[in-house]
Image (cartoon, rainbow, N blue to C red; front, side, top):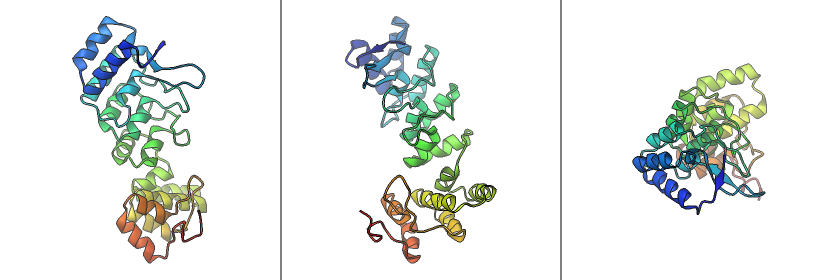
Length: 246
């Protein structure tokens, strides 16, 4: 798979066709240059970054016009649906679609055979679902679970899948850290019912995760989960500032 500069006229033309939804123009470009579907755009030198064309179709902020058709045309022309970004992380195009809540692109990639459990997420090297729940992309998260993605405790809590979460915690022995972790995630996902169920299991309402200085109250306030914030205040929950954290 060759790599070309993003300033190469072929790269400019194909990127524009993808981003404006010019599917007919994209198809002509691919027919005129049969190897174009499998090129990478960018720089493969040490420290450089490059991406396949399916990543162009799922690049932030996503939701490009006719993206499902674009993806189908690229895959039909030979694009590898599980090709990875090359750089500081190794996300697939499905990770990128999940990260921008682009459900149309997500379904198109899965329909084309994308690996729903591919690792390499920018968040903890996880799956597309890991990115979706961590970034609060709830449409993508729900779509991935509906398509069969394996949901962990964090995902179940963030999506408000309370019965499934409680069953999973029961199977794991309800370890304290797991309950606390799930509680933080429920607050992140604005899932009041789930958070309430986890408090009944002994969740620490002031738990600090290892990845950032944000208590459940902090994260609920950040995402605008007003009902959760009011409820947490009623429990005496504290922010990092209240706890004397920087």
